[in-house]
Image (cartoon, rainbow, N blue to C red; front, top):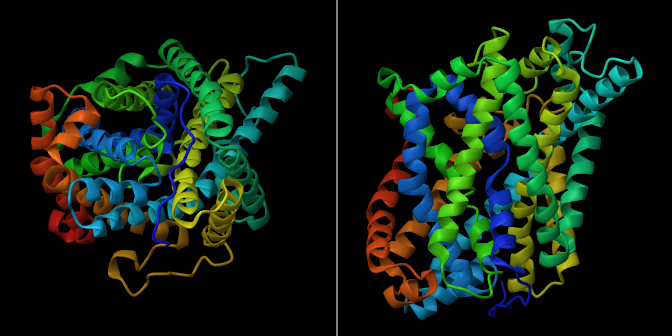
Amino acid sequence: MVATTTSTSEGWSSRSAFILAAVGAAVGLGNIWRFPTLAGESGGGAFVIFYIACVFLLGLPLVLSEVFIGKAGQTDAVGSIRRVAAQSKASPSWAIFGGVGALAAFLIVSFYSVVAGWVLYYAGIMGGDLVQAILAGDPFRGALAGESQDQIQQRLSDMFASPGLLLGVHFVFMGLTLYIVARGVSSGIEKAATYLMPMFFVLLVGLVLYGAIEGDIGQAAAFLFTPDWSKLTPQVMNSALGQALFSLSLGVAGLITYGSYIKEGSGLGPTSALIAVADTCVALLAGLMIFPIVFAVGLDPAAGPTLVFQTLPFAFQTMPGGALFGFLFFVLILVAAVTSSISLLEVPTAWGIGERGWSRPKSALIFGGGAFLMGIACLLGYNVWADVRPLGFWSLFADTDILDTVDGFTGKVMLPVGALLTSIFIGWKADKNLLLTTTGLSPLAFGIWRFLIAWLCPLAVAIILTTGLFPSILGT
């Protein structure tokens, strides 16, 4: 790392552009896939209510902290933290958690692109099925006509067994992400968010309405919002805590990087709250989109990770308009995946620009290409290298393949460490006057934020980190 940091001259054209991009960074597979999966596995209502509390008591203070660091630092995550530390007369070594975040973002986008490739493949399958339905003169028939449930479920296993197919969709998705990031903030990231996020919300609302009309919205709403407090076990609470961090993309320095492109204005509190509210609403709407369909056809809401790729395609087969809405469903997930992957790749790209002095295209190509190569190892872990266990010496990862190992290590170790150091730095080290002037918070709001970030957030994140590394504490 070079000694000096280069400030970027790039910036958002407006506050709304930043909000769209930041919401796009937060909204991704964690909302559309992971949240319904965890809600289904955790029994619904109690998990959901505790999750919402975690978002606003823990997630929101951390969102504001990351945006503040970026706004005050005006460069990549490492450089921004270093500048805030210098203005706060704190050690420049605090910049290490920016490096942890940038590395975590790089590792995550490598396997995120692989998983998004699965979505791309299914969007293609459902799109081809829709074309067939239109050509047959029945565009509103169910999806995947003529296929048995076994055939629909087998498609996922067949995909995993094909390295060439996985490599192809991974290449296309990573190529798209790299292209957008290489074009810059205004011409690439902002333009993508400006077009993709409105499309995302239109699709989301449309699919929720479809689920309400054709599915069992009453049972879904009862499942999601009627708590059975007996199901709020320590494991469920820990899952909700972790999901709050994961869903908002905290600990990977994405919001620090995006915050550095804010050039004017100081009202960061309302902006951060809007990001947290929008992200949470998307997660809840995703539940109201998926579970009415699941309950309508009598499927298991606790199907787990296969819910999206095996359970729902079969559900769309049995529903009117399933061919059309099944295709739109996977397009929705794909759009969410693109906006999140852009923010993940932007973090190390910004580091290359700010810390190494590279041009944006060079930095994006280096990190995008590196993540693509690492992603190849992840996808081969489902077939050619299925027996490879990268951290097999560690009991926590003794039985996990390459992709799940990278996912598990970043999620259980790197993200909580990044969030923990962020909360301690802002809560105990950052200069109070700098915090006040940059955030523009009222004295009351500032006091509440500083209390939550200094006391509650470190404790909660430390619990996530400890129980993630030592699951036997929770009896799992």
